[in-house]
Structure formats: structure tokens, C-alpha cells
Length: 185
Image (cartoon, rainbow, N blue to C red; front, top):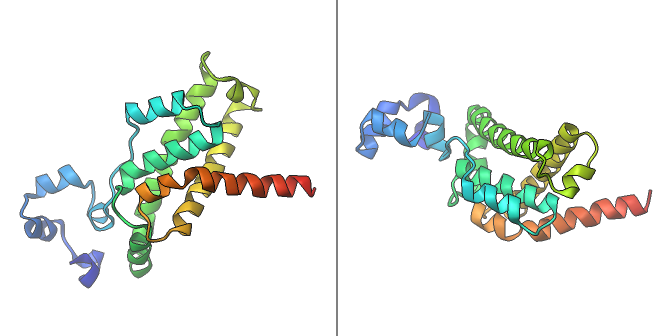
């Protein structure tokens, strides 16, 4: 309905009626009409995801990419193809703002986790060796975001679950590029 008539012309009442649910039930699933169109919801961090981040043997950057991807999957859903959302946003650019709100919220959640780890007495040695905790956390998060975007764009028909399978190889590509530019400096 929204894809045919555009998001502005679709009402929550119409979507709820089409789905056979009340308006109140609609809001149990989607905070906004735009979220229903995009198939998104507010990001969150599960205890399981947090525990995986804390206990993983992977290097810090890979763990940050994994937790960011995991948090984003709570917002984006695991079954929606990246390209499908891009097509919807290309057709209705007014939805891009809502999408960016979800991405920013996911990044904020991960940044808070990183800062808590840096500030805690139990912080691992790798985190303790980083210069200025907050700036380092932000820089690592921005790099993780770039790696995540690269992974999504490398497999536009892929879902979050597909992207998660390629995290290690995508991080490896970025490490090799950074090492190559460092070696040639």
C-alpha cells in the first residue's frame, strides 16, 4: 500500500485495518508508520549479544563489528534484504531520515558499551592500551560502521544473517588495506 501510494498518503488506521489488527496492536509492533514501511524498530542490546562481545576470543575490532551488526539486526530485522530497503528509500527519500535515526541509535548503544568497558576496572588489556578512551571508542565504532556498510553493499541482496557470515573476511580486507597504506607511508 505504501509503496503504491507513497508513505504520506497511507494512514496508520489503513495499515492496521489491512493487517486485521487494531491501531493499538499496530504500535506494539512498530513505533511509527515509517518503521512499518521500512520493517524497522528501535535497536536493542540483548544480554546474549553483550556476553558474546565480552567473552569472544576475536580481536577487538572484529568484536565491535559483530556487536554493531547484532544491534543493527534488532532494528533492521534479519530477513530484509539491504537492497530492498535502499530501493524503498530511493523511491521515497523522506524515509531516509528514519533509517538514519535507527543506525545512529544502534551506534550510540554500541558506543555506550565500549565506553563502559573502557571505564571499567575489568577492561581488557587491548582497551587499556588505546589512547583517550572516548575518542578511541568513537574511532573504533566509526571504523566498525564503515566495515559494516561495506559488507552490506558487497552483498546488496543479502540479509543481516548473510552479512554476519562475512564479518571476518570483511574485517580482513580493511586490515589489509590499512596495513598496505601504512607500509607505503
